[in-house]
Image (tube, rainbow, N blue to C red; front, side, top):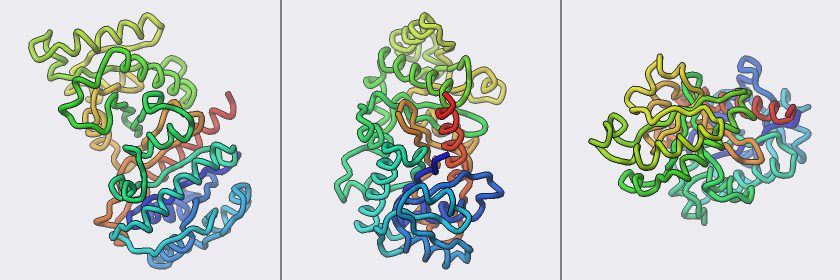
Length: 332
């Protein structure tokens, strides 16, 4: 099995910390071999500061990561920056961008089984020339796909949720959702649940946009005019889809037993329940890519960086999920 490539994330955030902590807990957490692209000095300083026995093993080829994984944390590349936790700057953002690009390149070349991305600060990346709304869109472009050809899914032990619209103002959501887009996203989700998660007959529950899913048109017509027609199209294609459901009832324990993923209409409709249920184990998964990509479902947390407070649970969950997805793809 090829190792996973892990991007450093913004070095002023908690990304490097949760990477080092994950390597230190590799055996107890059942983690497969991985390597980090860049930042050897930062990772070394961090391990010393945290009192973690984590030697840095500099490698020239990803294949070395597998046989040397128990010797220390494998790092590919020499690019580095000063380690200043909690103080983001352009040098750190440039390192984060270079690390991300190299991790993706390793996966596209077939030298890594997948990519796990540590958190970045989008505004900071924009200062060094990053022109994408987020890492998901960057991954899509790197793989030759448009932003509408991939889907962001948030996954945890209790819930999988997909927002149809992502990084946009809430006021823009009604004009951004349409029948074609909803159906296209649902198809990508159904395919990925089967291919990457081993679910033979995926069940998808679709949220309404308005309170009470519109209450028969009393609170809005998007459910009747846009969402329901998409559901009808998907059902005609043999996909098990239900809805539109009132979002306030769809995430209860009993309701969650009736579907494998929920399709939400906007960012917070999907992320609020996921983070409430599975914050420390939530994983951001990009569906529809030719490569595997996961990420912890949290941000850079500059306010706690370097203070020994960061929980590596979501990073370890992202590593485990990426390994499982890669294994399923290798067997298909």
